[in-house]
Length: 206
Image (cartoon, rainbow, N blue to C red; front, side, top):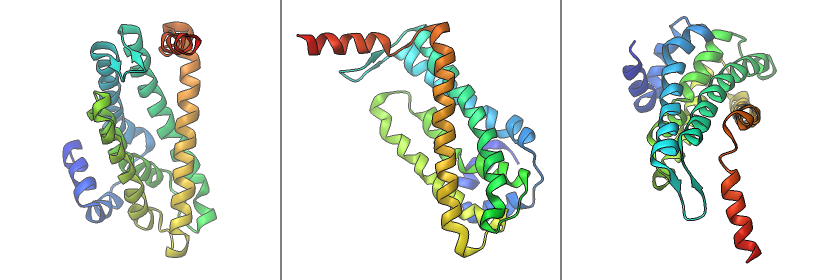
C-alpha cells in the first residue's frame, strides 16, 4: 500500500486500517525505509524552512538563519528516528506485563502508524501562527488505543494501562532524544536560543 493511502486510512478509518495492517508483515527497518523516514524527513525540511528561511518571531522569541534552520531540522530528523526505534523496542519489551503479544514487527507498526498525526502536524506547522495544529498529534493516542487489541492482542482490562505507559514512554524517549541531540548540535551549529536569552536578560535588567 502506498504511503498516501496508508495515511488516509489510518487517519480517517483507523479501525478498518488496523485490521489491514495486522495482516501485513513488517520489521522496524522495513517500516523505517517505507514510511517513517519519509514523514520524519519532511518534518525536518519543514522545520528548516520555518526556522531557517521564514524565521520565528513570536514577539519574545526571535529565531532565524541558516544555522538555526539546520539545528531544528536535524534535531527533528535524528530525534524522530531514534525515538521510533527506542519506543518500538521498549513497548515490545513491556508487552508481557500487559498480557499482550511480544512481536517486534507489530510494535513497530503500532508506534509508526499511531505517530502519523504528530509527524503530519510538524510538517504542517511552518509558522508559530499555526501552532494549534500540533494538537492534531494528540489523535495519535486514540490511534494507539484502537490498535492495541488488534496488533498486540491486548485484553480489554489491560488496554488503558498499556496505552498510558506506552504514551509516557514515547514522550519520555522523545524528550531525552531531543535533549541529547541538542547537546551534540550546540557545539557544531550554536545554540539557537542563546541570542534570545541574552535579549530577555537585557529586558529584565532595564
